[in-house]
Image (cartoon, rainbow, N blue to C red):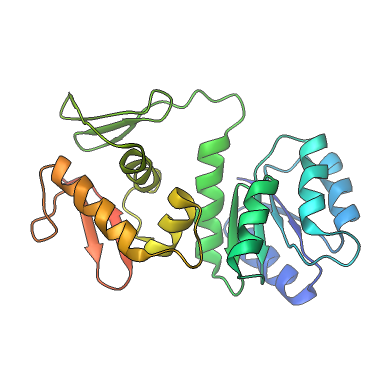
Length: 227
């Protein structure tokens, strides 16, 4: 059960997120302004903040810094600003992730799980294991059946991003945002090329996949080949 603070001035969106997240078993607190949200950060001690950038009393980017000053917790931006510059500014300001409106409740819930895995307070992240793959984020070492993989930096980042969501289809846009920090305007061909290189090092091909399974026009997922 996760404590979620929603800072959103649009009552319909605020209510929808409240209902959908509460329905998934989370404890939800809401605020319609930035300063009210900051007060709730202190009073409610949430596990994660969902933050709209277009608030009536304070710019969302400024609020990120203010939240960071009083609490160490993940912040997911929920915004209608879908231009690349706004997303980059939000990430640079300290946001852990972003979701562009309109969004689905399942996507938001998955993003919350992902940021909590990455930023769990006091947790010592251990290696992620998927089948014979083991990915250690701290040492940036990946092995396959006990043999170390010779991965370039972006290849490791790509594998890690997929391993953090095992079995889930991750879109190329999400990979561009998370691995290359290019949510908009980036070339999906870049993802295809790195996936091809990664497949080669995993001893598989797109035609005969084992770990990396592509869904045409959707994205790619990392699976245990023995499942």
